[in-house]
Structure formats: structure tokens, C-alpha cells
Length: 309
Length: 309
Image 1: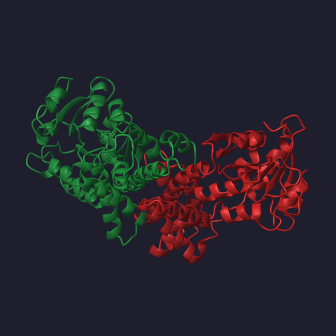
Image 2 (image 1 turned 180 degrees about the vertical axis):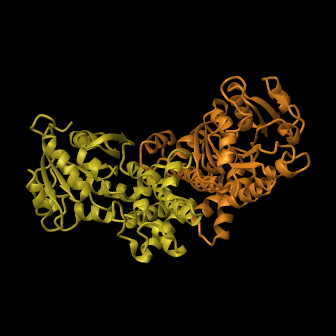
Image 3 (image 1 turned 135 degrees about the horizontal axis):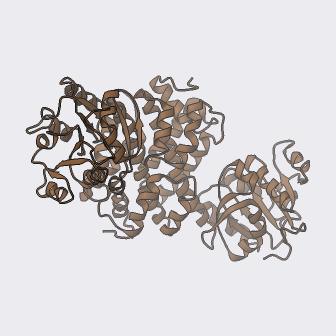
């Protein structure tokens, strides 16, 4: 375990959190609660300052955030943003202590994770590939699931900060890319299940069924899924304010089909689901909640779903 | 409640069970345990006799089974078999008591359920549309889920027998066809989830992941589904002995796409899943377990899955 990191006794080390959206902000709060000094950075004006009001330090750039940190956690959307955080203008890679660890939480293709890790590790620093599962509520509670892979040294250095942020930490391999691959398998399933839930609910409406009753029956039957339980209430309430946007699965199923094509592997079910997210984005709902796929079916077929436009 | 039916006091009425496969036989056992006299029929030689050894009566035809019965339960595969049981040679419709109820458990299109009900009800007899959820173990325990619809009279007459067979009885409407429609929404989801589980596990193998670990991670993550939990162990064990055969979802997703096409409603995700079941059947695995869709991906891509041929 890194000598500069001591969690749980009020003298924990400094952790940088780069990207203070709903996930990153919650993770920073969990770290503060566990006694870590937290330096936060977000490109949006005023966001880092609100973390400062909660006891953190508002940093002016990724490099500034990383300066004193033993652990740098990047909570951004994709591989390109992660690369910019590390190696872009005012990036954190060169500012990190020589033995610090970078914890990458974005969902990305395993190849991208491997290449970012190799570039950072060439300088002696450590890289943990650590995509997450769980939403903003679990981020704020410190009970996220992380699907992590990396060297023993990367795990050892990151461990106290990870303990503050996660409820379940999977150790999925000793090199970057493995965590990413597990996450993409999860995203294949999650994306298909959302699209299927939306297709099934719209189909049920077309058949004249009471949708609340359908939810009740399906959640107690073999057709249930985690996503059906989680997303169908948005359809029943006609509430398409984004908890997770359509564009997330345009991206994530896009990565799945790219990976599969690169390795000459067919994924026709994921491919069909991706087309539904793309259609929903094409119809102008890309930034709305991903249950909007049901609203698209509703528009196409003239259904009177709750909140239908 | 029908005057001829008294359950739970050792003087329960006679129930006929037509179709004594793994589901029907278990349901007949549950009825015997609850004190019903049971007359059983199955076209396969010797099957009804094995029910007789357990205390039932071996009937020689659907008509013979139905002769003394207040409730006739048909546990066959599809609408055509149900129609033959009712109206075919030695069918039970004319043999049923004038106020008896026919309980139809096969999964079928709502239109077929409506038309069978109308034909039987024209003679004054009652029809309950009652597709089921739950496998052979729950049939034998008397803890099936039934998605039922029909007239108040049909429910009242069937109720004591249903209580012996089910753990959960949904009352989904007052006409035949509604139970069937709910069941088809469930089958859309169940079929897509099986195909997605198989696609995801084969994709994970292609990516070099440890499949046991994938099962462990996914069942605790947002990508989980009832079918993933239930079917992926077959893939991990390479055990494709049929618990539920590929042909079942060729049929059930076939009904879904037929219903959807008839009402001019697109179901592209269910359509993609159906094609995978068809491909698996085309490759000679139609009678094998439906997790064989993973084995098809494995064959196509030359993967070394457990039990791969």
C-alpha cells in the first residue's frame, strides 16, 4: 500500500477527482466523508467551487488537481475525454507524482484502455482500468460497483480511495482493458434490455393492455430484467427527464459493435438495439432519458403512451 | 363457485388434465395432492397409465377424460393442439358437462384464444384463457403463475383447481385473449433476453474473458435478467439437454412478430432475436435447450465454449 495514503483516520491522502458531474461529485463527497483531502476539477464554470464549499479544493485544471494527489480519479464520459484529461493541454499525466495512480472510470473499448495505460505506465506511473456500475445515488453513498483491472501496484495505491467510493470492487485481471471488456459485456446486455423493455411496453399498448398491470406481471415473471424494473417506471410516468440519456447507449452499443466487428464476431441482437437508440436520437431525443425509445415507438405507431408527444 | 366443485376437504370434484408432459403431469400431481379426482390423457403410450399408478384415472381420449369433469385443463404446446383437444376426433368439447370449464394453458396468439373461447362458449360451456409461467418443478409443487382471463363464471368454476396448481393467479380481464396477450409480452422479453444472454456470453468468450467471472459480475450488475441467471449456467456447464427447447421460442417469437405485423407494429429487437432462434434450429439444434443459441455463435466463430461441438 502506498506510504502516502492512510484512509479512515482523518489523515488520508489527497485524491483528485476530475469530472464533477452527478457521478464524480458524489464520488468526491464519499471521499471527503472518508477523510480524504479532495481536489476537484470540472471544465464547467463554478462546478469545482461548489465542491470547495463542501470542504474540497477547487482546482483550475487536471494538472492542478493532480499536483499533490496519490490517486487521480477521472470520471468523464469516454476515451477521448480521458485521453484529454491525461495528455491534453493542462493534462494531469506529467503533473502526477512519480508513483501515483490514475483511476479511469469512463466506459471505453478495451483497446483504448490498454493504450492509455501503456502511455502512462511508460513514465512509471500507475493506471487502473475501473469502469463503474451504479448511478448517482450510489456514487453519493460510496456504494458503487467497479469492474477493475490493473497491476498489483495500481490496485494497492488506489485501494483506500476505492474503498471510500465502492460497495463492490471486482478485481478482473492484472492489465488494463479487462475491466473495460467486462463493462462492455454488461453494456451489451443493458442496452438490449432497455430497447426490449421499450419495444415490449409499446407493443403491450398497441395490444390494448393496461401498462401498470404489465409492469406488475412482468416484474414477477421470467421476462423480467434489471433494466425493465428500472426504466419502465419512466414510461409509466411519461417522465423522460434524463437519468441516463439515449446518447450513452448510442456510444456504448456503438463500442460493442465496433469491438465485435474488429474481432469478426456477429452481434445481431445488440445491432438491432443500437439502431433503436440511433432512431431515437435521430428523432431529436438523444439527450432525453433512454426510456425515450418507448416514446419513439409510440410516435411511430400513434400510441397514446403517458407523456407521448 | 360451481356446485359440483369442493376442494380441500377430500371431496373435491373431478378435474381432467389433457397433456401429461413435464408440466401437465406435475399439475395433475398437485391436483391429486389437493384431493381432486384426476382423469388424465396423453396421446403417448403408457403416459396416462403412469398417472393411474399415482391415484389418477387413465383416460383413453380427451372426450373420455372430460366425461365426469367440472374442470378440464389442457396442457398442450400450441393453439392447433388445443383446438384438436377441444374439437378434433374424440375431442372433449361435446363430452364436457354443460356448465364445465375448459382451462387452456398453451401459449398462443390472443386471436386464437378468442376464437376457441367463442366456439366453446356457444354451447354454454366456459373457457378460461390461462397461459402459465414457471417450469416443471413449480408445476409439481403447485406453485405456477397463471396469466388468466375469462368470464366471472369461468373463473368461479375453475378456481378450486387453479388454487391447487398455482402460487400466483393473475386475473387479467373478463374475456379470453387478454391472458394470452400478457403472456406474449412476457415471451417477447424472455426470448430477447435469452438471445442477448447467449450473444453476450459468446462475445465475452471472443474477448477472452473468464465466463464464470462474467456470470458472477453480470448477475450483480445492471445487465442482469431473469433469463440470464436461469440460462447462462447451461452455457457454463455445456449442458444443452432441453429444459426448454429452441423450438419453443421459434414458436413464441413467431407469434409475437405475427401479432405485431398484423397490427402494423414494428418489433425489430424481437425480430433479430427470432432470427437467432431460427438459425439455431436451422443448424440442427431445434430440440436442444434454448441456451444452444450460444453454441451456435460458438460454432460460427470457432469458440472453445464448454460442450462446444
